[in-house]
Figure 1: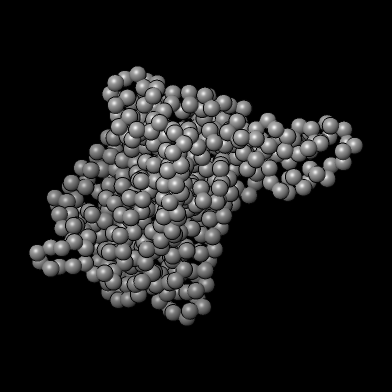
Figure 2: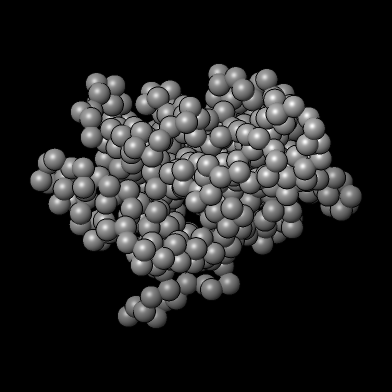
Length: 492
């Protein structure tokens, strides 16, 4: 229980009827993070049961569909490699289009996982425990999808290894002053740390699945990756220390990775890109789109697997508030871009922003504004935040809007260069479209595999927020106030 709550309850006169004190305590108590007074055993049975029960028909159909889409996307990649980037709609001056748009989009999707895992962990936000596992997995899969595009964008994919600063017989080294090389370091570091963070959190739950497994192959596989976990005090002490260190390392990565990605544009001299607002603007947009994707995945999973007692309305409400906050920041950034273009007095800069809103790509721009600025405003209403269908619709709009944002930033800025004779519009080909659709299929395919073979909720962490996990559970924390116990502390 917080100090403010304790102070408020201490003001209740001792002469008041016990019922009044109990009602006051109930009013001031925070909502439970696991509802319906579920036990630790129930959590183990519910989460492990998803993995242990036979795969339902819908799962097989979804895996088949998403795998087929991903396979067709890889066929498009093979066709592009064998034929050349001319199968895309790239032209002069639009040398970056759907490929880099998709790269930035997927990198942004992966930000919510690390934010939920690391930053909320360091700030002791216990409501993260029910959603951090799936968000971390989403981060890994999104970065995998993002990593595809820089490799195939170079055209000669067999030369992509020159992006890495490794010794070679030709003495050809990357340009260390280029933000494109910074991307290589930032994204690879982000992926490595996120993978380690995700796997570290899995270890106690893998041991639970190992001990429950009836199949010898499953028992061996879970036992191998559980690293001999037995749950002793010494192991828990080391585990918590490693988890804390990884959370500390991951926190600056949340800010640095998309900041470095924004340098791909901000360090250039192209009107529409050459602005200092890009780093915070990109980070806020990444968190904005990432949380929308978390809700897009978790709302159906919550309904299908009956996880309402662990992924409660409080979790959804908190994520909606974060989407509203970051969406407002993104809207402010859109407004500031126009203001800076006008106030800076650069006619080239101003013309780019005017043409974004009124030119050939105007419908892209206004779709972006509608999805990213207007749609999240529904979340000002607590009633609408409590409506699952409204929340899901807004999150889908945000997912689409964030893709349109990256397209607007990239294509509209370079389709009209300094030389009017070089102006040309970009039109996507079927290869552009299906390559992106293929990565969506790959993302969903990997997520479906994850929820089938690994616990999608961190059982050990959720158990830690139950009332019985508190050593003072059942003892009065306020002498003289009947019905007020220390259980409120674990719901903070």
